[in-house]
Length: 326
Ligand code: FUB
Image 1 (cartoon, rainbow, N blue to C red):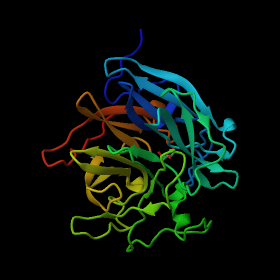
Image 2: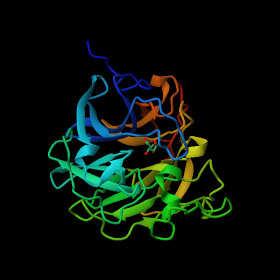
Image 3: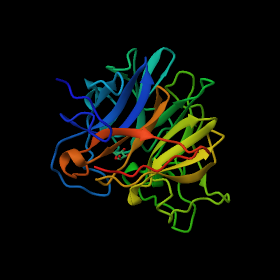
C-alpha cells in the first residue's frame, strides 16, 4: 500500500531530495526539488558536495494521497551549456507551457540559469541550447503575477557566487560587503513574454528594517543568503529566503514586486542539516511551507529530503514562526 505523507515527514524515501519549489498546476500540487546524489565525498564552503546531475518531479493529488515520483525529467548530459551542479530549480506556467528554471555551472564553472520546457507539468523537459542571457548565480524562483507579468528572483552567497558579480561582471576574486555595509540582496529580473529571456539587466533587491535602514551584511539572523521565494497574500508580496550561516527561513514584505522589502521575521527555525530552503503555496484555502532537512540520512548535509507543514498568518498579515521538529 502506498504511504500517505504526513506533515514533517519525507515526501519520498527512495532518493534524496532538497530545495522543494511547490506549485498548484492542473488542480494538483507539483513539487520541483533538487535531486541529491548519494555519495560520500568531502564537503566544503563552495558546496562541491552538492554535485547534482538531474531533476525529478513529484506530485500530490492532495494531502490524503501518496506522493508520486514522475522520475527523471531532465539530465545534465542533455543540457549543452551545463557542466555540473544542478542546484535548486523552480517551475512556472504561461503560454500553455511549463517552464523549468534551473541553475548549473557552465563549462567555465560560472553559475548560470537555464530553462527547459514541457507541455506537461510532470515533464519531461526539453532544455534550451544556452542559458538565459544575463543570468548568473543560482536559486531561481519565478512568480507569474496576477497581471500575467513574470519575474525571476535569484541569487545566493558563497558557492552561489553572488559576491563575484558586484561589479556587473564575473570577478573570481570578488568579495561580499563588510559586516557594517548593506548586505547583498537577491536579484530581480522581469521575464519577457517568451519566458525564455530577461527584459532587462537584473536589479538588486533591497531588504530594509521597519525604520527604512538596509539590513547589514553582519546581521546574519536577518540578511539574505540564498533561496529567494516570492508569493502573494492579501495584496502584499512576501520575499522569503534562507539566512545561510544562521540556518533560518526569514521573510520581508512589500507592495511592489521589486521591493524594497521590509524585514518581518522568521518562518522556520533551524532544521537538521546546514542548508534550509523552501517554498510557500496555497492549496484548497490553506497555506503550506515546503522545506527540507537531512533527517532521512541521519544528518548528512548533502543527503536531504523534502517535507511540508501548514503555514499560518496572523491577522496583520505577518507569518507565524514554525518551530522545526523532527
Ligand atoms: O541544493 C544545493 C544548494 O543548497 C541550493 O541551491 C541552496 O539553496 C542550498 O539548499
